[in-house]
Length: 231
Image (cartoon, rainbow, N blue to C red; front, side, top):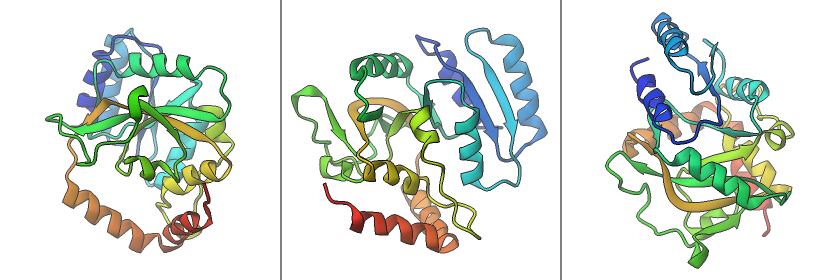
């Protein structure tokens, strides 16, 4: 609950409000519920829905969020992140640009640290257009290895159920996204920063290693995708 107000403030600062905020609370704390009630009463710019999900696996919570989403597009924002003021305007403009291209499953902007530093020291290779169309499996070839802020078509996500390996509580969502690449879907990746966060490289790396130990089958399948993929 101490991080969530920063997300809320970043949403209030948007210049366009064609979105809903779906809060999936895996802690299900009373303080969070009180905060959300206050925000609902004071906020008239966008709808807020609060879903307590205590003691549920992250993958099942993510699937539930996708199933409950009412918008045509879905964006996952973690509690340590904040959208930039122009993020929603960028997303809507980019969505208009892709039009009816069925091979493009969404758009994405970059993430940075709170002080504006990019997450990666590598400059993404996007050419003069300022964007590149790439799948989740070949995005690294364009310098897009680090976490990005994607806005993806809800209906396509629903056609690729979030994979959950038996006996594991946090099968990586990247496994599901890689499945979209194997079916030929691409994302249009832009260089503009649309999301900032308090990312601590050492902690995130250690957390990823713990996830690998707890979810060996999920990560084995993830690495197998790299072997199966041929551009």
